[in-house]
Image (cartoon, rainbow, N blue to C red; front, side, top):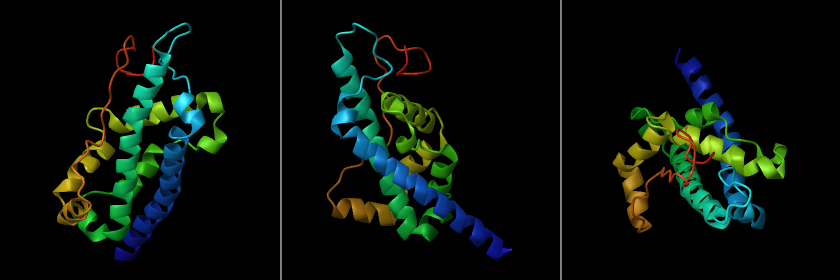
Length: 171
């Protein structure tokens, strides 16, 4: 029985590592010239606020993806501490299935990242809750204090003016 549980955990971590790569690719793309100039789905033709909208979208997602990657690294190095608290970031990231940007057309990449971000951050999303809980672990506090980091909110959705109810990015 314990072997089955260990196999399931290692399988979730293996799948999670692939998803971790996707989050890293998302961050790289968001900070690339293509990502920083992408016209987001929230922008409408002729909207003079397109640059502000693109920057706001990118600035909302980047810290969240960074926090996700931090959490995955913590789980990789401190699985016992995180699992004892019910924090299984690899499994949840795999379940959410971040987009594989290599397979997404350039003009759809930001939209796909926005969809993933909204799903991962909505209300009581498990991934958001797990990331919120990370600072309660002593190992995480020690590492983050040693790096002189302040607690970053893992998810901050800033609705864009004129966005549709329930989706802060789409008109």
